[in-house]
Structure formats: C-alpha cells, structure tokens
Image 1: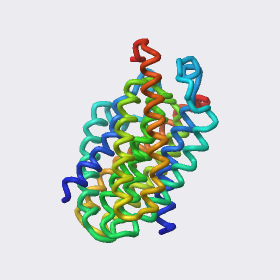
Image 2: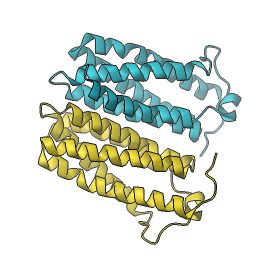
Image 3: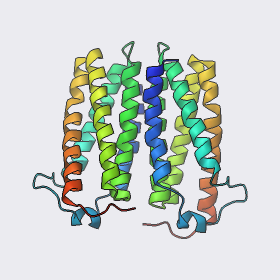
Length: 154
Length: 154
C-alpha cells in the first residue's frame, strides 16, 4: 500500500464523513415511519468509519497497479455521490431525490468493486462490506419513501 | 482523451453540480453583506459548468498516462470537497465551516493542478481557471465572514 495515496483518499473520505457529522438525523428523521430492521442510529458512524478506512486502503493498494485509472475514476465517482447523499436526505429532507442518489451510489460502488477485483483481490474484497451497507441503506431509503407517502418537501 | 474515463469523471462532477442546483442562494444569502466585487448570481452556474467539463477533460487526459495515480487521487479529493461546500454554506448557512472547506478545496485544486502539469501541460492548464475561480470563491467567503460578524448558525 502507498501511504501517500492512502492519506489523500482518506482525506476525500473525510469530506464525505463531514456531511454525516454536519447533517445529523433530527426530529424529521425521528418522526418518519421506518421498518423494524432499521439499524440503530449509533451503528451508522461506526459502520461508516470502518467502510471509509477500508475504501481508502483499497484505493491506495489499487493506485500502485498500472492500468488502475478506471478503478480510480469510479472511486472518485462513488466518493462524490457519497458526499451528496446526507445533505439531500438529512439537510433538505428530500427522500425521493436521496433515493435516486443512493441508487447511483450503489451502481458506482458496485462498479468500483468490480474494477478493484480485476486488479487486486484484497482491494475488491475490501469493497464488499461497503456494497452490502449501501444495499441496506438503499433498501432503508426505499422503505422510508414507501412508508411516508406525504408529498416530499419542495 | 479516453471517453469512457471522461464520462465517469463528468458523472462525478454531476454529483458536485447537483449540490449547486439543490442548495440555492436563498433569502439568507441575499440578506448578507457582500463586497462590491461579488460575481452576479447568474455567473456561478455558467462558470461551474465550464470548470466541471474542463476538469473532467483534464482527468480523462491524465488518466491515460502511466504514473497518474497521485493526480487522480487529488482529483477525487477536490471533487469530494467541491460537493461538500454548497450544502454547508447554502444548506446550513455555516459560513465559517464553509470557509474551512473552501481553503481545503483551494489546496486540493492546487495540488491537482500541479500533479496534472507534471503529466500533461494541457491538463494542468485546464485547471488554472478552476484554481482562479476557487480563489475568488475563497476571497468571497472570507469577505462574507468578515462583513457579517453575527454568531454563526449552530
């Protein structure tokens, strides 16, 4: 692993993590109808901390390998989409717009995982928990949209 | 230029652009004291459209060159920070937190530009207007902080 690359990718994760810290679940989120399998609030920061570090380690491994440009481009796409989701969901309370974003995030994480597996098995494997977590997040967002049919905020 | 890479980098710019579209300057921004040299509101989407396309072209050129991993890592960092700024400034109205973000964005854009210049002169040159614009945005954010000394929103 290249530690300089790791530091840059981790800093990018820091930008994404800042949205999670600054756009917290508030009264609006508490008031929503959520499915019984909704993960508890305390689990989200723990899960994201592990996933951000794993994704930065994976990118720092892959970055050293020739021909990694598509993998790194997909990595950039997923971190931008990841940064976008929290402000739209928790900031604007736009659950339907957030649903569109989380579907694109799922596709971007999946594409990154596949590209990483082609270069380095461990790097690809480090993205598996991330894809699983975004799958849960997508299902939760979809369930919230279905359970709360009031018109979305403008 | 690699068109597949261009499409992925442009999609990442789309995530950043979405924050500009969804977190618009509202009554709060209008009510702020701003310096005389503040660019007019209509200029921002035009400038950003040009800068996003230029940055995606630059990344797609650089991505084809062996040894571009640091350049692409810095590109990922700048797009994540770019996505973060609008929600914090226009969504949370936290001008001081946004100031910290825009300084990190300036540093990330500068690092990306330098890394791009080392690989491809045109790619580096395509980042010069972006760095100039973020310099203006940083100065504007700093001036707004100075001119509006009321306590920041919590």
